[in-house]
Amino acid sequence: MSSVSQDVLASFSNAIVGVAGYYVTGEGTQHVIVGTNDGTLTEVYWKSGQGVHQDVLANFLSGIVEVGGYYVANEGTQHVIVGTSDGNLTEVYWRSGQGVHQDVLTNFSNSIIGVAGYYVTNEGTQHAIVGTGDGNLTEVYWRSGQGVHQDVLANFASGIADVGGYYVADEGTQHAIAGNFDGTLNEVYW
Image (cartoon, rainbow, N blue to C red; front, side):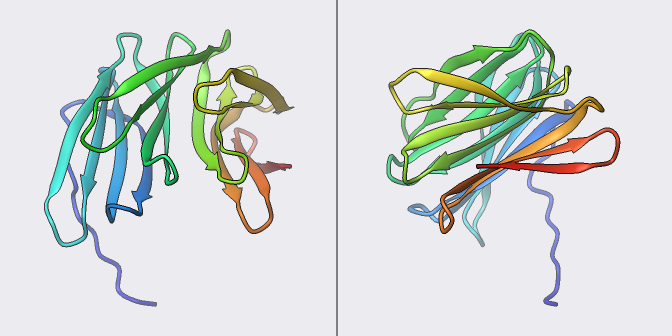
């Protein structure tokens, strides 16, 4: 195994409540999205061997619960999915050097516990995986500029602690992961 290095990228005066990361291939930049308990959404980004930068992307009055993030290469856009304490699921998106936009995708009547996001290249669709306090694992999906859809994928009676999600291009499969309070780690895939 090669050596493992560790760096402090940034320090925040408020507690961190959500973290997501992704790589922007066209720029060669690494990005970490940080949500803090005061409702601030911050992008921390850098190129290997160069300085670390950070920008505030948005502020959410209702408080951030969790974040997910991904890069859409064919659009050159960066996307953050934000779950807030009022049940809103919001997409924050931008192109490097351009303005930041945001849209509320949907609202959940049960509290949001976990959020993940990914892009499906062969469909051109964006996806958010959301775990809620009632044990539901939900997929929210859309194409840029078109309607937003959602489906409950599964329900876990033991409750969801956190979620993950990703697309496997070689197989054409989507995967939603639920870590549950009873200690089980579940995969839902299609």
